[in-house]
Each structure stands twice: as C-alpha cells, then as structure tokens.
Image 1 (cartoon, helix red, strand yellow):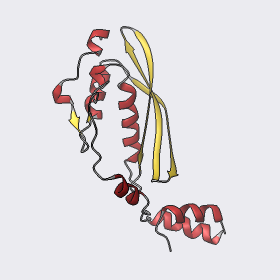
Image 2: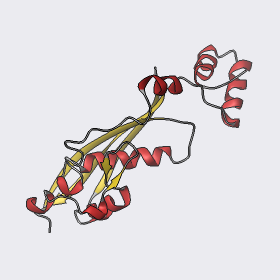
Image 3: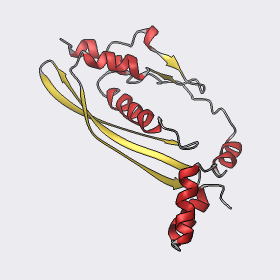
Image 4: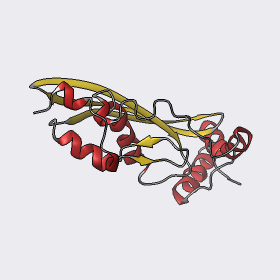
Amino acid sequence: MQTKRNLNQEPEQEWVRSNPDGSLYIPINTLEDLLDELEFSTKNFHHFVYKNSYGLILSGSIELTVTIDGIQRTFVGAASFELKGCEFHDTAKLKSECIKNAATDIGRKYGRHINEGREAQSPKPPEEAAKEALKKLKPDMAIIKQFEKAIRENDAATIALLSNVYQLG
C-alpha cells in the first residue's frame, strides 16, 4: 500500500530520461508500471485539433483516478503539441502526455517538480521556429480527396481551411 511519504520520494534515477532541450521526464511505460501500484484508471479523454499562428495544434485532457491508502483520488492532465503531419500515433502520444501530466500531481515519485530549477534550452531560435511552423504540410491522399470533394461541392470553408494548412494546387 502506498503512503504519502512514498509518493513524495524522488523518482529513481533509472526511471528518468532527458528531452533534447534538457528537460527531464519519466517515460509513459515506466509511469504506467508505477501507477499500477495505485490501481489507476483513466476516463474522459478528450482531444481536438486547432490552428494558431504557429501551425496545427493537437490538444487534449484526461482524468486519472488512483487509489491511495484506500481513498480514490482523481487528477486531471492536459497537453498539447504541434502536429508535424498526420501521424497515426499522435493521439496515443497526446493521451500519454496527458496521463504523465496528471500523474505529476500525485507526488514527486511520479514526476512532480522533476524540472524544478532547470532552464529548458530551445533547440532553435524563436525566429527560425516560427518560420518553420508557418510552413504548409504535405497532404496525403485522404486530404487531397477531401479537397477535391470540397471543390466539386463548392464548399468554401473546407477549401479555405485545407488551403491554409496544406500545400494544395
């Protein structure tokens, strides 16, 4: 059984990994193994895509429920990241990030304060990152078909949306 003291221990060094920017994290497979000790479950995973001045963003949230010392507690985690294309695993990656962010509220063992006192280093200067974010994506066949259908049906909103995001025509 977990106690409050165990939850606030620092994570084991072998659990911790480093991102290219120097920030630290606990990989989802390790974190889920730790959460298994708490009889965890997830529900209400919501996600959506939107476009901002940097490009397409995938954003979402999830509820993580754990049992600690016989008491059920629910934590909420959210995450978002820029889409670099349409990848099959993007939604799974988002869900993992949401779970990791919810788990940090449980205690230090699960990643709370893991980056305290650290300064993340941007891999690219802001001007270069902004310029890259404004590049249009290369469409796959499904997007091309959706675009052609929008043209046939005179769907101006879909044509405008797809033209803003993808390299079309």
